[in-house]
Amino acid sequence: YMKDMTERCEVRAKDWDQRSQLRADELAALAGAIEILTKEVQPRDEAAVKRALLQAPRLASASPHSFLQLASRSGLRGAAQARQEEVAKLLGSEGRRLGSTALAALAMRVSADPFAK
Image 1 (cartoon, rainbow, N blue to C red):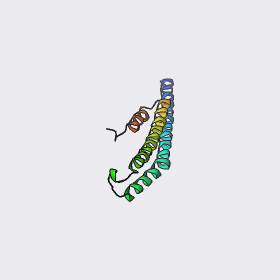
Image 2: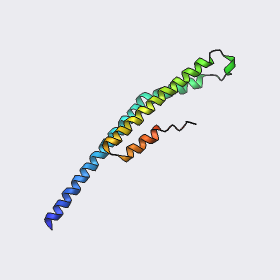
Image 3: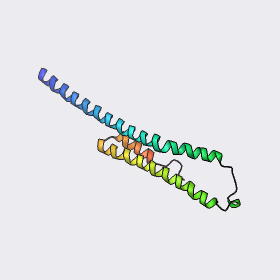
Image 4: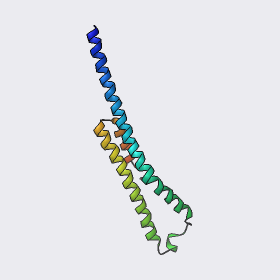
């Protein structure tokens, strides 16, 4: 009985260590994603909000430069979308590497664009 109990305890301890390592790897992947978001996305988002608050509303036909302004705005969206895809790719690859369904699900949620029509 003692031998059987010792084996079961060793197996459970090994499983616990593997799960603990998996969670630590998941946390490291999430920390990397958060770092990307806070260092690259947040400052640009704040700058875009400030610019948006400073702009006065005007008619599109009143200004000959409106097309250029729209192009630059779409460029900002493209850069933000590229960063969003980078974060989703990082989370997805870490989820596959670690075999984590939680990270894979988070990658799917990040890659979905909530503002797309």
